[in-house]
Image (cartoon, rainbow, N blue to C red; front, side, top):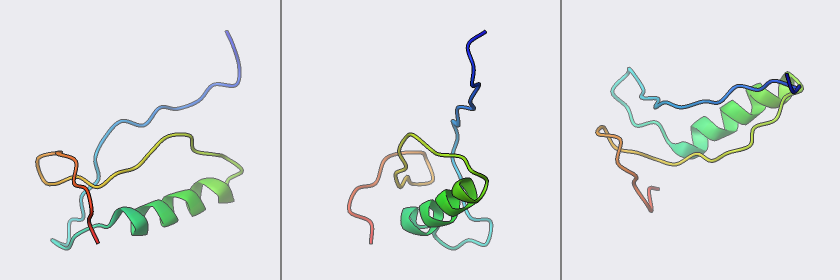
Length: 59
């Protein structure tokens, strides 16, 4: 088998508090978590609505 092995993420995150979760807030925390463990993330993140549809221009 070819190494190194990786993990592919496929899913959605929603805040359980009822507040909106911004892509910027999440990505900053996620990248910090990844880098602290000597890992890297290759991929993209984008804001979605409650039905999983892409939202552009969220502030």
